[in-house]
Image 1 (cartoon, one colour):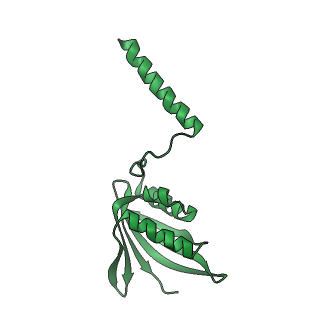
Image 2 (tube, helix red, strand yellow; image 1 turned 90 degrees about the vertical axis):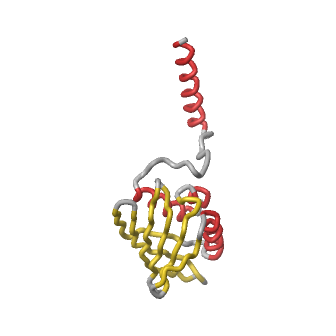
Image 3 (cartoon, one colour; image 1 turned 120 degrees about the horizontal axis):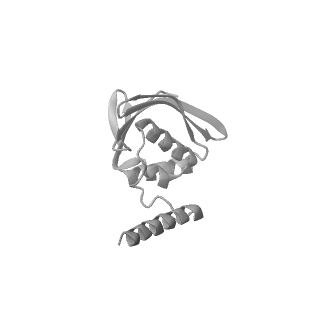
Length: 153
């Protein structure tokens, strides 16, 4: 009996290893990401934005992610779920095909990650940029809330 259990485990491990070697292993669901520090989650999220990989990006945010902008001292809800975030970014990429985000400084306090970000894009053949402070609230390994404090151009 012991040999049969061992053989099954070995077969399972070999099948997983074989799938990994052939490239057949992908994220089974965007709801499964490896455990990481809040700063690693935010850095990976920014990386997916720069690669324009919206499917991968959605793996780093909760289904009910909220995106706020602080405008004239008021916190305004811009996005209220993962699909809306993906759609908004898709429209943004269509409008600004060379947009990039750079983390100039990152500070972490528990599950809160503050990032001094610079975004750059091309508009009418001219490179424009803006700096802002983004505050990411991470829950259970995913971004739950994003709040942007933007500086004027």
